[in-house]
Image (tube, rainbow, N blue to C red; front, side, top):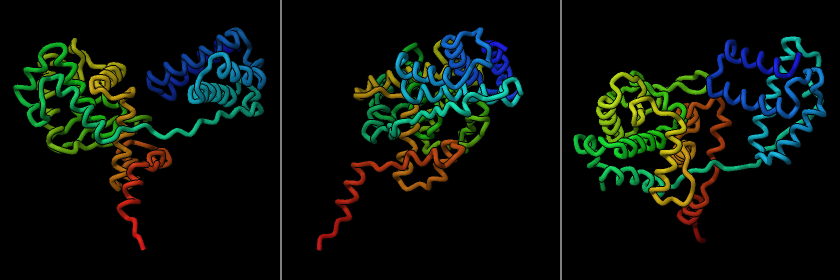
Amino acid sequence: MKISDACQDYLDFCRHHKQLSEHSLRAYLIDLGEFQRFASPSLPITDCDKHLLRSYTRHLFTERSLREASIKRRIACLKALFRWLETEELLEINPFHKAAIKIKLPSRLPRSLGRQEIRKLLRAPLAGLGFNKREDCRGEALLAAARNHEGHLQFTALASVELLVATGIRVGELVKIGLEEINLEEGTIYIHGKGDRERLVFLPDQLLVRLLRDYLSHRITLSPNHTRLLINTRGGPTTSQSIRNLVTRTGENAKLNRHITPHMLRHTCATHLLNAGVDMRYVQKLLGHQSITTTEIYTHVDGRRLKELVRSNFMRG
């Protein structure tokens, strides 16, 4: 069996039996395609040995100059492929058993925003809609400001940033929110997360509830037939990349001196909840983490907060 045929069969297995998402399938397709180009699509799978795998890893480091996380993902994809080939008895010996390839990730703390940065970020779309105070951004005045192209983008940016910061949901989860999954009376949203895991997230105050109610009124005029919450200027459901672009643009408008992403807002939500003393198990449930060890990365010490605590609790003599 050629490596190209093995990759195609594995992708079919992932689609029909593992039922991976389109996003995951696309990532697998890209990663496996890159390995095929390196090794040759016509190479028999029996010729894929530990030397080839080590050579490919060096190629990713030296010639592609990829970061450790990107390389680790590509190698993990290959490991899954060869593990499947071995399980299906299409390959007698898995070359990874003796390859001893381990990619160590550098220790990086999650990037989050401080309270002042969050205030600036939330004020940017507010100003774009022509409002100075959050309390005034409501009802007919808000709907009128959002009627043109730019107004709609600013309204969507405001709703997106507030939801991401308040709930800690992923950008992919945000764009999948359906109208039937929102309960404004209860202040909850039903989220379909990674691995088909489902959870409830909570809207923390009436300002956000009212903002979403106004957004629902606004979107009816643009998209009466679509069932997703967030829509683009053409009335169709918006995409994860569109929200990433909106969040980054909002950060630039807010004059924040760094590149802002939706995932930073997820980190921000988790960090602020833990710093406020919320039990880690509750934060784990809110974020949809399968393992609490994933949530533990947010327990890093805030240097400024530590300095305040030391000063306020210092006892001389």
